[in-house]
Image 1 (tube, helix red, strand yellow):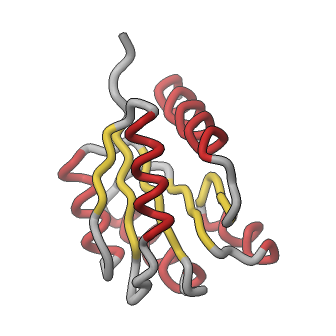
Image 2 (cartoon, rainbow, N blue to C red):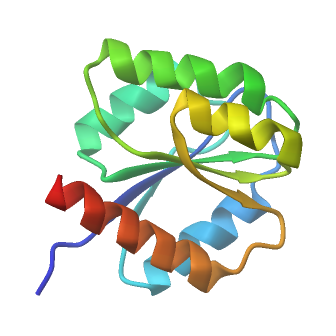
Length: 134
């Protein structure tokens, strides 16, 4: 039996739209993953602290208010400061033009509104499996 994948789902800044984050959290739980949801209005520092304390395999950021280009760089910097190598995925309303820069910043996968849950689940499983091999 393989270890349970631990995923942290977070909402950064003043983004109060958490329906998608909650739906994704339930889908990941249904797929056998353990999900830690930070709730609304988190800071990058707090997310990194929780990720470290909970020993998560993946951080999932939900962004619905076009603040991802502000908060993702801050989150990646906080991860670097904490010397943590935790993959970050992003979901929500993400303009396609932002995706190349987000990937340059270190985001490993972007799931836009309308992405299929089974694709997210399989992507996370593959990501964790490849991380375990490295």
